[in-house]
Length: 127
Image 1 (cartoon, helix red, strand yellow):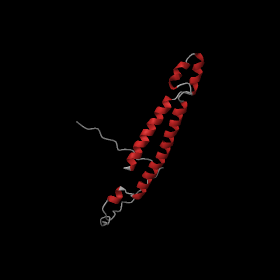
Image 2: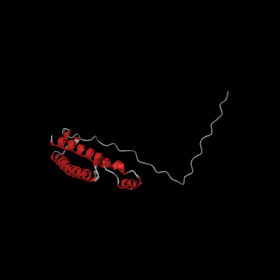
Image 3: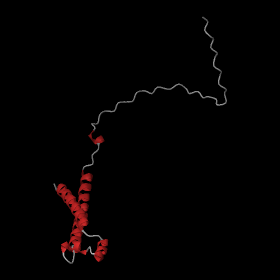
């Protein structure tokens, strides 16, 4: 239950950080104010929204980092608590002795300097 709540909080904080970063004005936005584009930045007042949005971004970033550490701790603790593998679930049975091994015929070595024998000539068929 706690993991589910923290995971939902993680997703919400991630989306909030993305939305807040996209709402903020870039550093190069002030250059356009000198050429008459300054009126578009008056939505949040003369001071701008950089203070409020940057504070909210910092708060959500802190929540995201702390939440990441908590989720890491919870998942690592659960992983160490019950180590299971497929081999642990296999029932143990009596060992059956292996069949007797069959000996292979001896391996002959081939002389690399030997000349291969010429194939036999085939006789033409008589009608």
